[in-house]
Image (cartoon, rainbow, N blue to C red; front, side, top):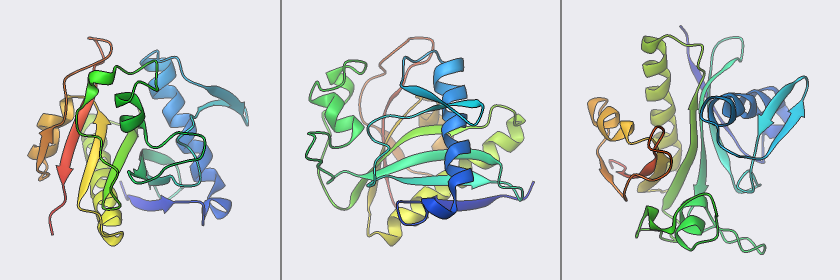
Length: 199
């Protein structure tokens, strides 16, 4: 399977609307339908999408897709120095300050506001993929996120994802450490994972 990656931002979403919509649909299928999370949704072109307050002009999205532009994997990236007038910053920090009712404050004691540290959330892969293809897509998403953040002079990623990635990421060449305890549903827990980018 031939994979391509695209970084979406406010600068190019207008020419990549198909990727953006398909990405929000993939998120809905995983986080709302499969995992049962109570998130904001809307109908769009006959399919449901998932979105939240962090899907704003400061967000960047890694989109891994095939030659037909079908979205296979994604994650959302936000610089941790973001501070909106609405009071929101980024998900991990806002949760640690008690601003998000669905995420315990105890998720981490490391929630910086630094230009060179980025947050990665809404990490999702198309559920129709085989295990082998899923692993390839996951790796491509991680590589594309790392490569992009390095171009922005980033040195670290804070990920909010399944503890599964504490094992999977090192097996695929990424050096990570736990950034907080497992939280959420015991059947589908998540945690903060810190990933220092290689120079």
